[in-house]
Image 1 (cartoon, rainbow, N blue to C red):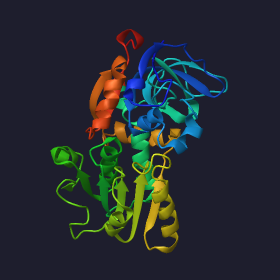
Image 2 (image 1 turned 90 degrees about the vertical axis):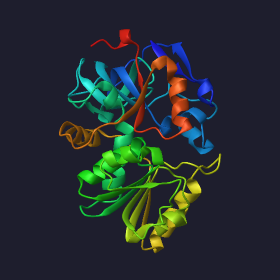
Image 3 (image 1 turned 60 degrees about the horizontal axis):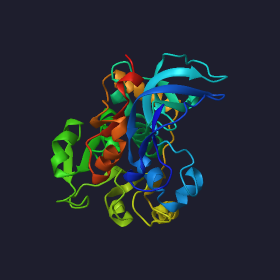
Image 4 (image 1 turned 30 degrees about the vertical axis):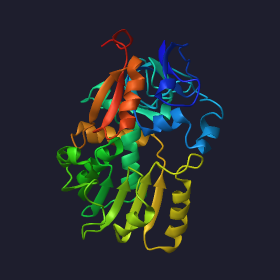
Length: 329
């Protein structure tokens, strides 16, 4: 099968199309014939091996799994022992280990039936980004109707879902993005949009019950000044920081401060679970939220897709599509 393989950590130039063996599902696993795969910041961290502290989890000297990708959507090709509720031919989406390939493995508890009213390309934009937004707002922040929510990075993969989810929950949403994306963010339901190039989040008199920081490029004191007296900050992922430890210093300060400060300061590294995917499926099928695809690239152009993401500010998610002969109707 064709796959995007990386044998050394580095830039998008280290990604190459290769023929590799099709994986076989073990107990509790499912083999998925991939139709589309999402490209997100999580892919960049594994590709570059940065911060270096992540390498014990993904491979000290080179990626342990040479095939990139986490998000994906496709059809079940085969199931391993003790897998129930899934059968060959089922349309699914979720966390696929090595989704930049014609076939990928997934743990059964990390995938769910694909929403019936969206394409495979749209579904591939959902798993990591939408689950992250859902867990940030509901699991971490305990969002309530009527609260004021600030979403930083509102036009991106996580941010576009966070805006929609917060609006659906009855919150008043302010989005932060580049000026060219303002109309797009308003179309998602944001009441107000701040252009990060012209305004700092503390320039207005408003303070927020919940701040979701999906950009990771603001100092913690600035983020805290944007919070209401009992507000909650959720920092997603952890961009920036040092080559060795990334954003760990900020995360540690948050953990210490939240013990004594009136603010609730939380970090989030989301884990895709079937239960969250089922919740998202219901919201998508009801029309409450809609996956947003910025652009699509064929599998062989994965390096170009990653560079597009690195250049910054996609509106929604970048998605790879598989060769036509690999994804029949």
